[in-house]
Length: 359
Image 1 (cartoon, rainbow, N blue to C red):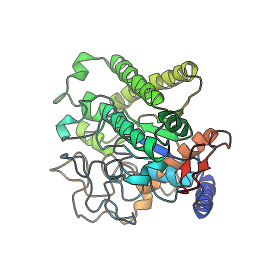
Image 2 (image 1 turned 45 degrees about the horizontal axis):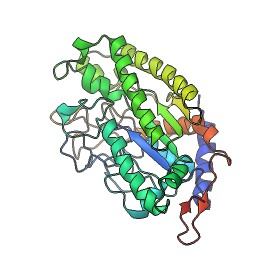
Image 3 (image 1 turned 30 degrees about the vertical axis):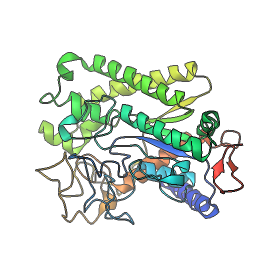
């Protein structure tokens, strides 16, 4: 478990790295859902969009499309890695920005393409991978000098984090009103089918050059205020959590298999566990006023949220507060630490541009 003392040490390390402007890896690529989205949904026709107050109330730039009052996990990991700017969203990343990485995450996205289609547009995992290939083409001319081989050599030094599966349950399997998956698959069969598809997607990333993977386990959605409200109960929904546990168990086995199969790659499971501070004591109620007319468990626009946000686990009905993102992001950074070695992250700066490049 990550302790408060460890978190302080990690954040001090991040401050040192920022001062030195020397990140521990040359680039960081992010795939996922609303827990990682930092603006990719802003221009989409979707209910899963949060570029309005009170979202971003504790973020320097205000509402940016992050499903949080402040930073999300990807932001925290990027800071701890030593990047002096947050990793840009694919929707707005331009020019040299892509050299240090891109965030492809999209609110409501899933492993399955149809997941969350009732909410509108979203960028599924398959589409995020296609967007990554667009970035790779850009990188081929920016740092590969036209060589895809050099570009892939560069990508081997980058960290990839992927967080998928949450919406395939809360916005698919447990919504029989819109989706047939729960009548087609038992929970065991669904977990198997999901992980099978997920494995193919991760191998597609491997083929594109990725080698260092941090894969987030799905969260226990049955304990979110949104799911408890949907099921009409005041405690965690065991049916949902049990299904998610099946997914995580199969995911862990599959990552071990991939480590054995793809010997030059490393897949690490990030379970998101951490030690709760004693003052984090509101764990079943959203900090903001949740809308009853739009989105899914999102904050009502322009309403005043709770003032004691440090004491809350949930910002809205499904997403954590910034404080939780700091705790879970720090734990993820610690778990990924085997990637931060000089042998693995050898970096070179182009003598003309000053940007990190390959030899």
